[in-house]
Length: 355
Image 1 (tube, rainbow, N blue to C red):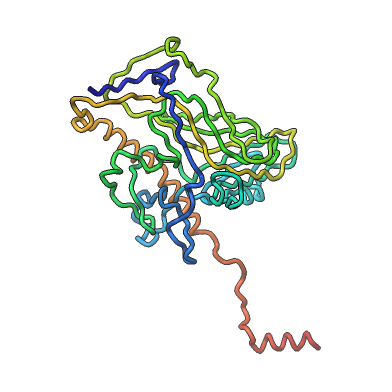
Image 2 (cartoon, rainbow, N blue to C red):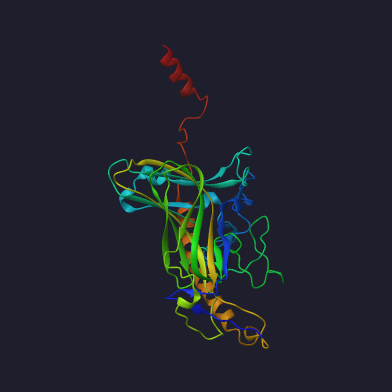
C-alpha cells in the first residue's frame, strides 16, 4: 500500500534520516550545442533551450518568433551589480563566459567548460555586490522533452513523462525537505570577497546561503552546513499532512552573489565555478497505493500546469522585451563614405595634398 507522509520540523520538511545528495546545477553540462548562427556556431544549450515566442503576441512574423529562444548556455548568464556599483564601464565589462579547463589539469572535469565570471567592482571605498544569475528564472514545472538542432521541442516520450526539464543537474531538485548542507566547487584566486548561493523554494521564497570567502588559490569545495539541522528524530516537531494532494517541494538555483567589503580593494574579480550540490532530507516518502489518486483526480497535474503557465508568461514577457530592444540597437559600427571609392574628387584631393 502506498503512503505519502510529509513531516515538518520548525517550518522544515523532514524525512526519517533519508538524507540524499544531488547535483543542483553542473556548469560543465551547459555547453552551446544547437541553434547555429549565420557563421555556423552553436548559440544555445539543447537541454535547456526555451521558446519564449509564446508570449510575443501576433505582431511578430514567424521568422522573428523563430529567433526568440534562449537557454542556460553559459554566455547567456548575466552579472547584475548593485546600484551604487553600476556605471557604463562596469556593466559592459562584467560578463559570464564558458571557460575551458586544460586537458592537463588534475581535476575530473579536465577538458570541459566551466563558468567563468568577470566582475568590475568600484575602486573607491564602497560596499559592493554582484549577482551572477541565469538569463531566465529556472522553470520548476517545464516537462522534459528533446530539442532538435534548431531548438524546437518535441512531445515528451513515455520515458520522459513525469520528469522535468531542469532536473538532473540543470538547476532544479524535486522532493527536497530540510537542507542539510550545500557545496560549491569553485576556483579561488586570493580574493577577499564573500560568496553566497541563492536558492528559491516551492513557496517562491528566495534565500541566500553564505559559503565563505574566496581568499584561497586553486580549486576548492566550499560547504555551508545548516546550523539548525536536527539529526535526532525524537527531538523534531512532527506534523502530519494529508496524503493527497500536495505539490512536491523543490529548490531551484537562482544564482551566486559575490560581495566586496569597502575596506578591500575593488577593480576586477575573476572567478570560476564547476557545480553546486545539496544534501537534504526527502520531503515525501512514497510507495504503491491500491488506487492511483492522480490518475483519477488530476489535482496535482492541474495545479502544476497552472504554475507552469504562470512561470512561462513571466519568463516570456522579459525575453520578448529584450528581443525588441536588441532589434532596435544600431547595427552599424562606422559611417559609410559619402564619396565613391577611386572617384575623381578623391584623386583631386590626393593630388592637391601631394602638391
